Image 1 (cartoon, helix red, strand yellow):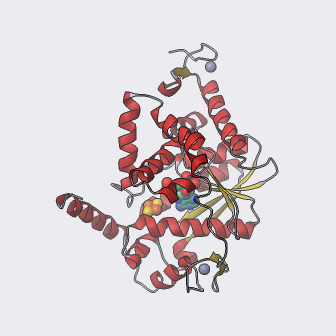
Image 2: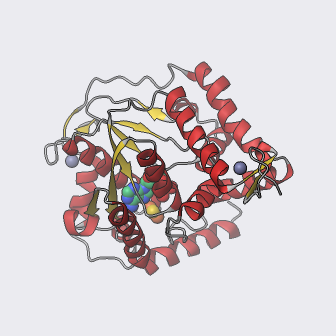
Image 3: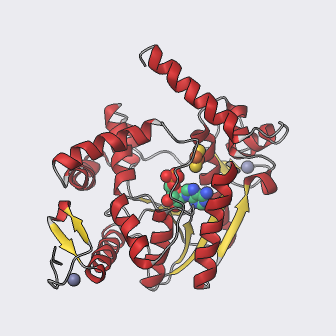
Length: 328
Ligand code: AMP
Ligand code: FES
Ligand code: ZN
Ligand code: ZN
């Protein structure tokens, strides 16, 4: 196996590029793909202050590493979600990465700072844990970006993540979501700009980036996400990708190039009606509510006895079994 660029021994084969690469030229390919995403979608300028949302997983640590390497000013934000050992371990990986490189990492804890955690929030809302989790993360990304005066929030969503979301949205023909599924969300009404510089790189490529660069990351998936629809879509796309390499990239990147422009305008939501949450100051548009959704959740969940992770995981498994039995 020889590197396409230098003909030296290759360390990775990338079927979708129909080529193999040595470590040096693989890293170069990744940097090039990130630079292209940043330029094509005008993600940020060289002097922008960047806040990277880091989960301790491969993607967010890799994107932080790449941005720092490319010379950007990027700090990290880790949110402790209170998901048992999974959260403790992922926090350790994020802290170690930052410490070893002398980078600034802000660590926030849902339990210590807001009086609740994701398993308890799941019980409070009666919905799947990922929905309260996602809402809390988005709220805290926005909050800490405003608080720290950052120009933009970066997340580690990669090509596999975005293709899976696109798959789900198109299975439902959810036109509003499809119209909003862009790697850049402009700043508006007090919400910061949000970008996804890894959309041109796959999960496997990001794992390889970490191995080559010597980055340790949490390998386990969140125990509460196991078996969710999103992971099912990823598996389905991987089966197709195996048979015809490159399908995932052409599906998602082709959507951005050819379909997104046709949907422009669908997602232009009115800016009228937003006011500041009376508790935390965040912009909120909920009709008839002066308090934002996060503060309402915190109010409810923080009065409840903490729910152990295992209870929520078991409940999700039971729900999945029941759904299977009734054929849903
Ligand atoms: P996920 O929603 O878990 O697929 O994560 C998507 C992206 O959200 C990651 O790549 C990170 O950028 C960010 N993220 C996820 N979990 C956390 C966390 N606990 N703290 C900070 N950022 C996170
Ligand atoms: Fe949010 Fe698992 S990381 S529910
Ligand atoms: Zn090479
Ligand atoms: Zn609020």
